[in-house]
Length: 66
Image (cartoon, rainbow, N blue to C red; front, top):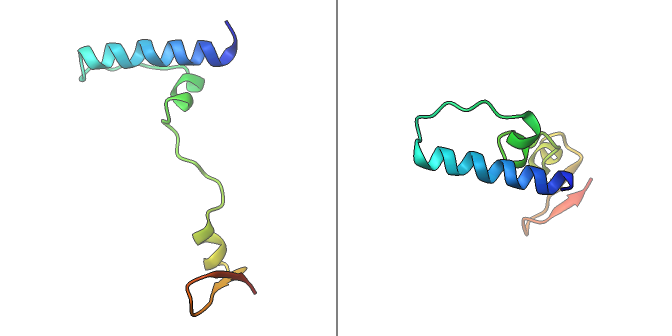
C-alpha cells in the first residue's frame, strides 16, 4: 500500500466512524487530516497580489501587471 492509498483508507475509515456518531471526538494523524482537507490553504491568493499593488484591475475588470 502506497502513501496515497493509506491516506485514502484512513480517511474513509474516519469518515465512516464519524457518519455513525457525529459527536465522536477522533484525533487524526496530521497527514490524514490534511488529506481530508482539515487545513486551510495558506498560499498567496490573487486578492493578496492585487491588494499589494503588484497587479491592478482595468476598466473591463481584467487583472493586469502594473
